Image (cartoon, rainbow, N blue to C red; front, top):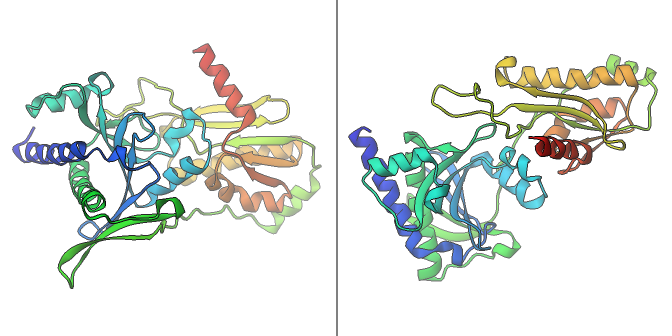
Amino acid sequence: MKLKDKELWLELYEVAGKIQKLEPWKYLWDMDLLVYLCQPLNEIFYCSVMGHAGLHNAIAIYKGNQIQGFMELAKNQIPEYMMLNYQECLMCNFINRQSTLPKNREIIKELGLSFRGTWISFESFEKGYEPSTINIEQVKTMIEALKNFYMMFRAIIEQGIKADFENGEILARHYDKEKKLFLNYPAPLMLPEKHYDTIRVDKEFEKEMMKLPQTDMELEFEFLNYVPIRIRENKEKDGRNYYPRARFIADRKTGFAISYDLINKNNYKDERDYIMESVELLVNYFYKMGRPKRLYVRDEESKIYLEDIANKAQIKITVRPKLKAIDEFYKSMDRMM
């Protein structure tokens, strides 16, 4: 490890140790967000404290649009094996040695640190990947975010600053250039907008769809999410393991799996190419079997992509975090593994 990198890691562990002594999980729930408007990095960090309910203690740092996945998890009962698709963040963990990633144990040893009982370690959660050790750029990000989280939390317990978390407020922090100081204050929660491109179809497509019979079938369609199946060959140059994508069409009423594929990311050129290929698969099924009465998808992102197609084909589209037929198929796979 380079000397500069070691100094950064030690700085990160120092601020994490200070946070550990304050035990913020005794005061805050995971939905009590502390938000830092970071001018040096031109970024917004949403900080969520885990552990108030008695589970493992941690500070999760969501950067910008990543907070959308957190809110999706908070409002919907996403199946556990699907959570990896909605939890993108950097995390500071306060856990036991056995739960600490082997790579993190190596870093701790190289830094000359030691822990008794509770270990401090850092993980990166990225959609489509196994949790992994953070890289040096993420170390810098965590230092900035956690230093300011520490100051915000101190403002709560030492200065009595309050935010009405139960009614949607957050505690915010930013640097005021005119006053030349940091300000901590309650504010309404503002979420960054996340834009998805609806796949547009023309009048000719609508005419073709109207020629097809409409059946009483209700289909479930999954195509954007990854499943936590580890494939040995699926590894990046930096050592991170990545998961396959699941593409699934199922009959909701009968539970019958019509089409199921695990897709390796090397099998398509880019995200748009994969989405168009997946939608084409669904539309080809319409041509073969007729238009279903209803189409179920797991989240708003899937719905937005398919909305124009469903409207033109006069198919009702519904969001359900739990897809009855598809989830049952996943469970049966899990029992066989």
